Image (tube, rainbow, N blue to C red):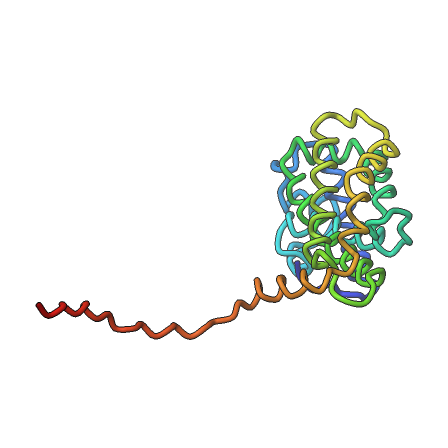
Length: 221
């Protein structure tokens, strides 16, 4: 994604383009939408569009990332360090849009952008909670696991036409991740830390010298 310009004019341009894309996604499949249609709906010039985004996928990913960052700034009630309950609620409220994304091929782009931001937010939150010493599971791996579990559950929810309420999905997510989270954040034992370091940086021992073999002596008769 291109560097985000923070001046008010650029923010207004981005908002117009985002609104145009959302409106078009509710009318037709995402795959069928063109940049020309987006800029015509937003009443924005082509050069202005490409000054902010590479293509429509970049526009969609940027929109999703801004949403995720805004949710990531809220204090999280759950143990994962991300306000997953608020995200389930938001997706349920915008279910027509997310169903359109799923039909039109844009859902994979949206979920990939979501997971990218979630990993960063969760890892930062876990770093604040972790105690001294190396945790049993490295924080980058733990953050990736928590985000991937959320995305997998979300994808299943959308693929099955949202059969459960957001609060039920949140309860399922916490059931999946909460039991092992404190154990993963607990300091690893000294032996585990040594094993971990050896796996990352195995010692290289010099080869042992090979002793020359000698043929047995024949006894004199």
